[in-house]
Image (spheres, rainbow, N blue to C red):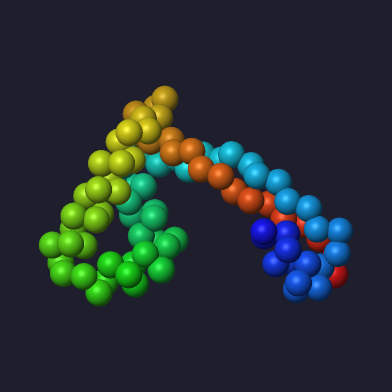
Length: 88
């Protein structure tokens, strides 16, 4: 699907690969702050909600991050990155 989008944009010899990555942070709270900084669409979506809903959302992010303890006491959260290459 993503390869087709690149081809439709004029790229040739398009290839993609999924790479498993880990986002690490010193604490669940630091992960929350990181996500808030790098995810403007999320901030925009929740900014339209009440302060209580916003707080509940970010608390859920912290609680979810706690499910991925890292070896050093922080958190280490797995995720996928899709790498796409092509020629223009």
